[in-house]
Length: 278
Image (cartoon, rainbow, N blue to C red):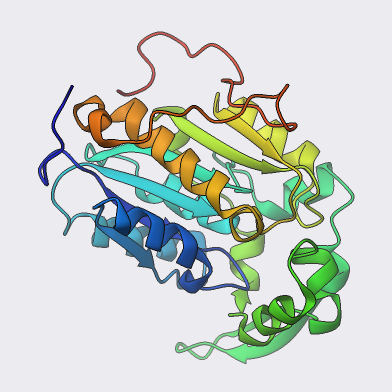
């Protein structure tokens, strides 16, 4: 059985999405740190994909050894952008994440897959940028936050999340993606079947298109908050699958499949030979 070392153990970087911050990953961070991983909760600027992706990409270049990237919601777009051309990144893990294709935007996919409660809950606040240009920051109405974003989290916790939400630039919502790394890297996807922000149908479309290994949970948009153990296990599954040298020190119990508690850990489809690492 392989021996885990600091050289072979990946750094796990967790990237939050809109209306959130990295403290939402606290359960995953603690669980992974307890297993000896270096874990980084990355502060996503939420200003727009070109800048946010470059910001993360530059940070990743300061790390040594293999890297597993985890992105929630819009964080999925950022990890997909930042990983392009970085051979250290071995896997992408999406929590209810946006896995958009080149030229696509969140706004376009929301229009294609109707049913999200986010649109009616958005409140725009005019802002002036450093260059003097006019723009808008988007917030979720605190009165709608619980139902639209975190319906399976207790009301008191959701109210704190709503009060602490970080604004999302309108330009980031409408801006198109560049080439995504999910086309060349193995992917895992935690799909919330009770998500009212990104509908399950839209999540499934993106996850299957990315040939991701999908795990479905009866959870809201913050599945990693309401189902923290499942989210952590999905990260560990990605680590084990893409870094076999460390597998001897990882939990060996498989994730539940579709016929057990409604979950699935099966790949969405066959990957094209030679198109994905590792």
